[in-house]
Amino acid sequence: MKKNLFSIVLILFFAIMTACSNSDANNEDTNKAADPESNEVERTDLILATTTSTQDSGLLDELIPIFEEENPFNVKTVAVGTGQALEMGVKGEADTLLTHAPASEQELVDNGDVENYQQVMYNDFVVAGPKADPAEVKGLSTNEAFSKIFESQSVFVSRGDDSGTHKKELQLWEGADLTPSENENYLETGQGMGNSLQVAAEKEGYILTDRATYLAQKDTLGEFEILVEGDESLLNIYHVMEVNAEKNDMINTEGAKAFVEFMVAEDTKKIISEFGVEEYGEPLFFLFD
Image 1 (cartoon, rainbow, N blue to C red):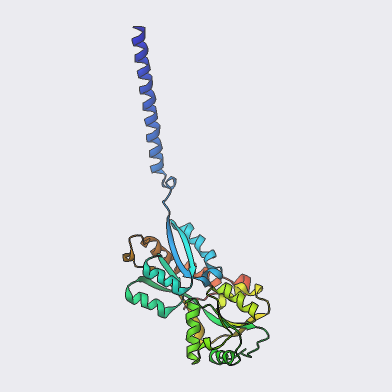
Image 2 (cartoon, rainbow, N blue to C red; image 1 turned 90 degrees about the vertical axis):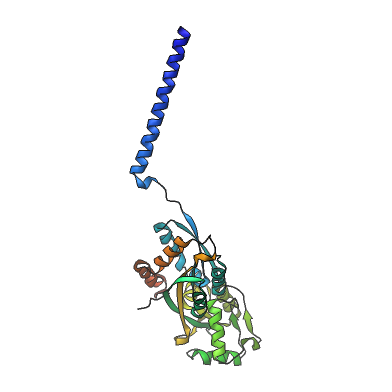
């Protein structure tokens, strides 16, 4: 009898403990449901293929943390030449693109490789070179400057990487009716804007660069300054776009859409318009009216 009584008591004890445990679990679930902030939102990766100028200028370091704080996406930035970035879009190897080669971008739009194509900002290209200016190009038009650099066989450093800057440079040589490779001092780095600027400064040569990256690197370049600027042909326009979701089933469509909307939002535009003013005394990028 004692043994049976002990067994009954033991069974009742475990039954009560189980009921209490279930009650606690139910209460915890109820509390979580009542407090939405207790449920962590799942974050996914977003691949952004972009030109090196947005990276080298520091703009993305300013914008991406804000985007990630406001959205459940971790941005994986691939900073390459615009040509490579656009190719990643064609192959479906990125979710969203931020580039600056409008003619090449339009081809992707026309082919259906990208969508939600939006104009974001602009700055300009400039010709920078040694303060001594051996080719005497300071203040000339772009065509005149390129002609004098070519005729004097001065050192000219090209990115040579199919980037937006490289594409623009080749357009300018063509506009001046010149073949740059016929200058024995024409150097191709195959590198990004920041590294190419360093090479140009070291070689005391001329280079086409976007203004933003030049200003961001200026203090490291020594006696190296802007010599040619202001031509309409030097306008540098940036667009953002989504890669077509039909490229593959791994495209983060939701994230790409959110990034495009973020880049053209009024709050973001304000940040872009003020970026660089405090440090350089002028903005590095401008907005369209």
